[in-house]
Image (cartoon, rainbow, N blue to C red; front, side):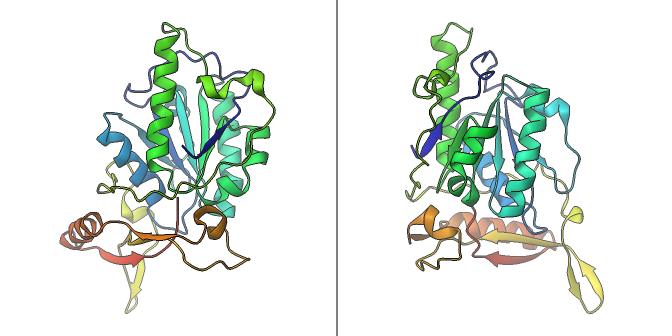
Length: 260
């Protein structure tokens, strides 16, 4: 499925149900001042499958210990280097607050730094188009719990006795069926970057029209995650999001950024 697993020693004491409200916590750390699509879109994928994730954006709101304590799966988005540095610190705090939760990293810099993350604080690292892979990881955790009669254990392919680190995950390049991003739990757009129009600050939203890139620039983190592939985010989802934001009087800038 495009993810590598090497659970930390505490993670095998897995007891909670992932489908409980807040059983999954999606964490954004930094997206250049934008309201983070990198958690809004995975949230929509999870909700479509019956999960009820909680969202946390530590770039504009404080670390929430209660959300972390409730979570059985904490998934940290790291689409850029700044987010990676912040995300590692957040994951370490999450581990201290909730030692038995499963911590996953996803995004462009997760794949590039898989060995570092798995050796330090991560239980799983997901590469490429990770939205559906997050759903599959949640299912694996739920099945592992059920198979153990509720006592809980890490998924079979991720036993911690196999602590020798796996290779970095292969990027997931499948074209996904994108739902409309789920933004309702995110902070208001007032908390994010604004547009300066004639000296007046206006609310600004963003949508994502494509993912990946056909170019293979050596300085860029995108090629290792997409292998030169590029795809659209399905026009229906993009247009619905843009229309919704326009009706609310928000300036919307189509984005071709490549966050996983």
